[in-house]
Image 1 (tube, rainbow, N blue to C red):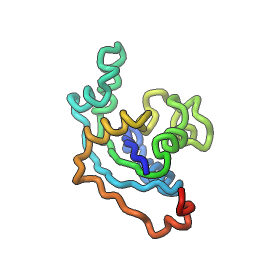
Image 2: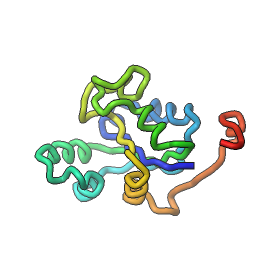
Image 3: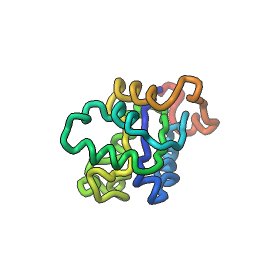
Length: 152
């Protein structure tokens, strides 16, 4: 099993799309093993987006991500990082394919509803920014034998 981090951004929360987004992940067979609603502080934003802090457009990003509540979650499943990123679609909602979360619900580059970790190192770092080990609750749904073969 692989874990990845997702962040339902303020636009997702304000547009009341949280349930629809989470349902897509669960329908795919991925497990939500940690989740909480919070407000990102400027300090947490700088940690989360450390690679972008020096860029000229960072203040706009920080203003957006700290502008309203978000939902942080850990998603677990086979190839979870790749699967989640494919389900999200292209960063720019105008370029995202129909059927993806951004393709169906976003028409913006920045207000693109959901952040998803781009690799194993980023996932581990981002999960540790938002969750302690004691906040992650792995489980095996009883439906698992009907979702994938035992040797997968």
